[in-house]
Image (cartoon, rainbow, N blue to C red; front, side, top):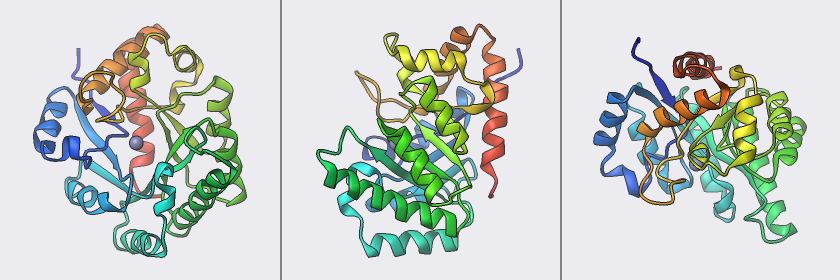
Length: 255
Ligand SMILES: [Zn+2]
């Protein structure tokens, strides 16, 4: 069998749980066939580490503020993000989005929506793709993308919703990031979505270092996720690898 290659489309290699070991982690992943990495920031303090990892051509960086930290949004963060996008045409905007489980009240939701809107505006102005975190907010993500007139797409990562929600996000221009939830046999909805979505709409990810009950997740686990996706769809792992790599190729180069 030909050697299969994969991309981890969502790994927080700048996270303190991984950053000190990132050269080893990247080497281990590469040995397993995981050769490209999309590395988002979660907050402003990550930006420098994310950009330094992206000195490797195999790493595609994103800068942005995760919805869990929406209260940290500031003019300084906005202008630093703009400055990075201006200076580096490879950088995406992320991880941005909406997490309505983490929003305690309507004011917190509104705050997330405002911050998401501002960052989508930056992605639109600099013609960049985005990495979106969505938990229980698919309709609001699709609606905000539409009202902001954002049309460069990207990835909605760690998909956990229903097939209908996935299709709503695909219509809004996104690929669906399928990841470590598949390692959990009881994650019924996401397993069903993987069986039924068009393979052209799926990309693979780990969300390292998160998502594992025990231990630290790393990008090498993309291979395992591809194998489970193949079993669920009744196709070969090679078919999953080839098509998901094509899907990433279509996103990798600048808009
Ligand atoms: Zn993430």
